[in-house]
Amino acid sequence: MFHRVQGNAPLWRAAAALTVVAALAAGCGVVADQDRIQVASFDGEAFTRGDLMAVIREKPPEERPIIRTRRDLREALEDHIDTEIKVSLGLQLQAEGAIDVPRDAARQVYFAQNPEQAQALQMVNPEEWGLDAAGLMAMEDEMEFRIDRLHDRMLGEEAVRHRIRQALASGALTVTEDEVRAEFEARGDSIVQHETVAVDGVFFPGNQPNAMNVAAEARRQLDQGADIEDVAAQYVETGQARRIRTRLVNDPASPAMQRYHRFWAQATGAEEGEGVGPILIPSPEVGRQSPGGETQWEQLPDSYLVCKIVEHTEERPLTLEEAQDELAGPILYRKVMEQLRAEYGVEIYEDQLPDPALFDTDTDGPMA
Image (cartoon, rainbow, N blue to C red):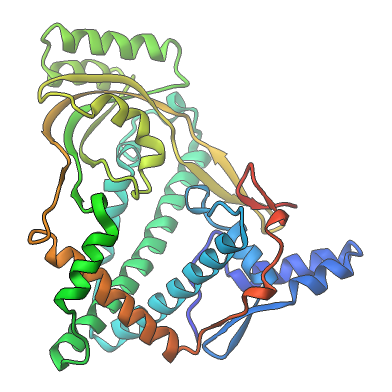
């Protein structure tokens, strides 16, 4: 049985089926017929417009693709199929004992991408953050769900790396100097060592009275030479803030960038030892399942971040020699994915994709 990647509904096919049933119940037979149009096939199964709409709709907001053109739809479809293939292969190889990715590794990656959530687990008084016991439990359940989902994807990526290692060892795959140079020239200025900072600071929940003023006072103390340990203790002990110590990477492709772009507007170019903030950091949305099976997204309180820059490494371009491994990796990756798509019998029927106008350009999801 082909593995179906976890989404925010139990299974994408169940969600798609509900969509079709709901449409028929409302008398929308034409819409239901349109949903049954096949847009792809892989692993011997048909994948329909309804399936594609369900996959996009059930993605977490930060992962939901922006659909403007038919090419956007094709890329979303290809990304989903590739993910299905990789996760299926990863679970297979894990069962065979060929690879392993500890779930704790996924947990560490998740909290590195979402440091404020790691601190949220340590909150003493959830009520001060606008959460009751049920809300806190829902937040924790959502975190574990997303960690499981990330773990599946990490298994899939490790499966591809395993296939690459096998192919290199057997000589089935090679990378030429011309391919590496062409990759370097194609990617141009994007081959960089990203800017990174290590920070030590506090989060102030934005729904507390005078949160901005309290955060501004913490920043004032830092500017006057107060030690971050003393400033943090002052607010953490009274339940006004949560402590954060983490390393952040200024990578535009990172999922965390959507929430931390304001941080980088201040932190880029900052000196070690310099204070940063207050900066409003949007909190992630938490998904809850309604009785009807729909995912309802709830926004947690945003927080103000005040911190000290402990270490700062500026972005710099990599030379062709420095980037050899980074350049060879994507080339090998593409070659293995081409092999896997052939093995799984992937076919995409682009002319059968739905009209991009069916997608809400404000929410980046299918319109109801």
